[in-house]
Length: 118
Image (cartoon, one colour):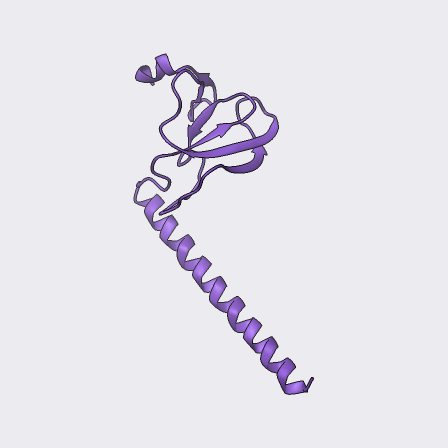
């Protein structure tokens, strides 16, 4: 392989990396702009612990999902309710009835019938 082919490959990879970094910065800036304006960065999404079934709105956990779609997405993390390292389900919805919800102010578990008082 000629030396100029190697140089072209390296330059192409550098340009690709630069474009990806620029795109990620623009996405992050847009998410920060929306969050600073007080808007919902993950409208209609919740995070549910697959171990204890407690849930919290994704926006309150700092998740950004703008124009996202997924089915069965799981992420490995520590649940703030049961403190276990477990899979956290990222789901669309407002939280299942009859399951516990994590209060963002006190980080305590509350039950759905008490949500009207929060």
